[in-house]
Length: 173
Image 1 (cartoon, rainbow, N blue to C red):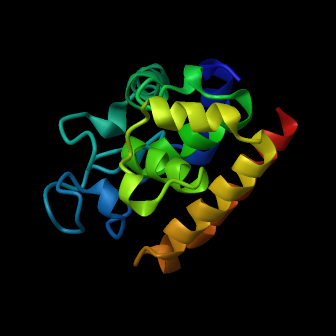
Image 2 (cartoon, rainbow, N blue to C red; image 1 turned 30 degrees about the vertical axis):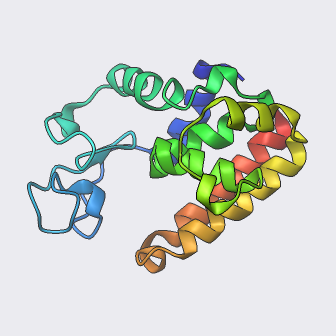
């Protein structure tokens, strides 16, 4: 899957403008009540982009951000086709570092070696892995991560739908 197709699928998860005051990501300070409540649009959140005019963000601007800050950052073009979208989607939802840590956990790295860096060892292990098994392990580790968050009660249903959709994407592509 190439970036344009991945973005098309991803943007369906993200939706339009929201300004939920209970969502830490909607605040420029990254915590409810800290900074300015600017909201999220196309999944681009105020906590990550505090100087951006979120409400007036265009789809083209969002796409450029996704390419630069997520797709390229987790080196999706170097990843096997089967897991490319999984990693990209998680990077968008929880950050590039977290997406790579979950990948490393899914590849069986010892805890002390889970560093969130997509280096030679991680790339070698991912190339040697069975794609279908990796998708399942990655999805299971995503679920474990999400359920550990204090905001799971509020946002967990959406996160679980996102994981399910990502699994379907892996099967259908």
